[in-house]
Every structure is written in structure tokens, then in C-alpha cells.
Image (cartoon, rainbow, N blue to C red; front, side, top):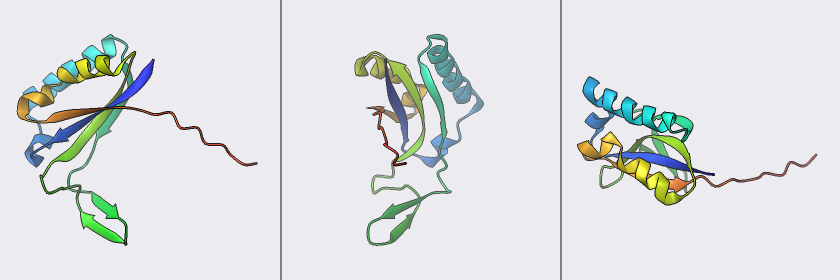
Length: 116
């Protein structure tokens, strides 16, 4: 079974502060993934205001903001047999109802060899 990160993109900082009803919808969606035994890592919410972007040349800018004003609000990691199955889980995300999007990426296993 592979692991896929579901990365939540938001278009409006107000979306990072959901209503109690939106929180309940998100929790219900997540509970469904847990009940199906598909949650590998509950992930976390990422701050919108306490963030910087570091670029080459010692360039540091405020926030994760891009020109299109889209930012990553959080992530979870699910375990599924295929990318398509992970996409199906993402399609049920309540975030889509408020204009957000979900990026699905396979979590690659990287092995680091330690020198003794």
C-alpha cells in the first residue's frame, strides 16, 4: 500500500478559519477516512500568518503567498493502493465546497544511508 499526501490549497485566508459547521463537515470526512483504515498521518493545519518563503540568493519573503494568492492550509497522509483511490478520497473533501482544492501526491520513500 502506498501513502499519498492530500495537500489543501486555499484561495482566501478566511477559509483557514472555518465555521463550526465547516469544521464538523471536515471532521466527518476525516472520520470516514479513519473508519476505512486509510489514514496514515493526521497531518496538521499550517499557519497563514507565521510563515516565510526562503529562496536562493538569501531572499526571504513574508508568508507563503504567491501571485495568485493561493496558499497551502494543511495536509493529511492517506494510504491507498493507487493514486486514483487517493483522488477519490480527495474528491469528498468539504474544502472543495468553499472554493479550495486538494493536491494529491505520492509520498516517496527516501532511504538515507548513515556512515558509521
